[in-house]
Length: 265
Length: 276
Image (cartoon, rainbow over all chains, first blue to last red; front, side, top):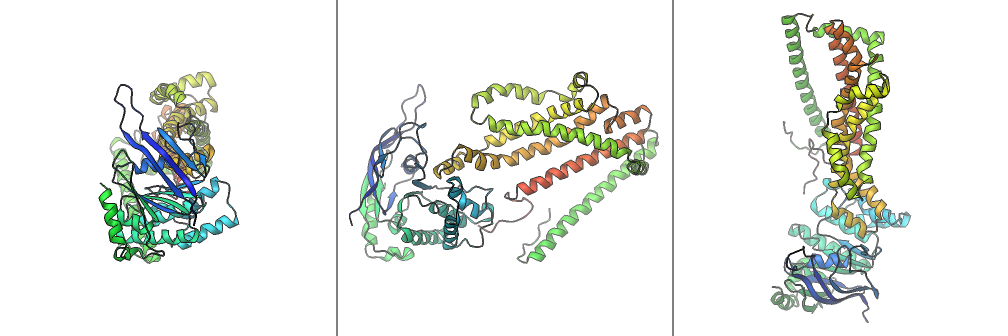
């Protein structure tokens, strides 16, 4: 299969604005380059504080870069100054953040329909899709609950399908399952893979958990401690569908884990 | 507060809640009885000339309500308070939204708003009576200016309490400036605005009564003043009780509207967490 580059990141650099009279702040990201192919599930691992969230914020166009280029579908994205940023690049980039960021005054269903509402795309078909996703992640029966009435895992599911519902060509995920207990986490990983199998979206999934990166991804990038650079790239040929809970006993798991582990510092 | 065992059965849960609220009601009645007894005691000690007895006040109140006199005065005061409240509170609630994208204008206005908030508005009553006469206009003006600053600062706090992550999330999903204002800034500020309403509501009735005390020919404040001039303490108490009733009515209305609009908030008295 001739993979087509959907997202290209070239020599991306980022340092936060320095205050007057101070030394310039250190680079958070320096000369970072990688490519995400169409339909690929790319996982990025890096130590805490390695600028993973900053990277995704830049990709999602809610933060500026200090240098470099980002091309989505061969179009350069405006990344230089905060005025010209276009968050989400006209709904082409979905972003599932660490916090669920559900709107507390909207019910589960209203939260899931929120992107469709603001994109003026609310109709029979999109509503049916929302209902399908709600059922697919086991939130049926909780459509009219407010976020504070849901458990942490349920809120996470709602926030996940809120991005899936409007079907952006590429979805960024920032440690979405970080704050969950192991059981819920495994379940959500399974849900995510199942949903991904339905549509084969392009996903960039950031985590600090090597096991999660291997369990989910087709390919794993390792980021160095800051400034973030690509320290290594690992193809993952464990066949799909994968057994998330039993991924560790797959013969290819251990060597891959070992190769990634030595690079994550 | 007593904690009730959590039950899965909705009927039992409802009964438990009912029992809890009944118990609170019972305690409230008890406090009321104690207060009435104190009042009765005072009127026995000082005589009904100085402190009208609760029973006497109740009889007069009943008579006044039957003859329509109390209702006439009360509805006049209520009208002043309600009109002043609307004229003062609605622009005050809307202004911080209009100023949201103009931080410099907000900063310029700030000291004046703080001054207006701190100034004793009731002292303006004589001035408003000079300007607007002894009719309803001066009372409405006083109520409006009293309410305005309280609600302005509450609404401002609500707009400032905005979570920028929610805004970013909405923008990534394609929300424009209007969507953000309508779906995120406004609903997020509503609880703060209601806090302002709740605080401002008694002030609106108090403001109307005070303005009437100074100069009026109708209203509960006028009734207080008239009774006092006739050495009729029972009449003063009747007017005060009627005023308190209006405050209760206002508070109840705010509660009802708030509960309808803020269904999404966790109720502190109920355990609605679905176990996380």
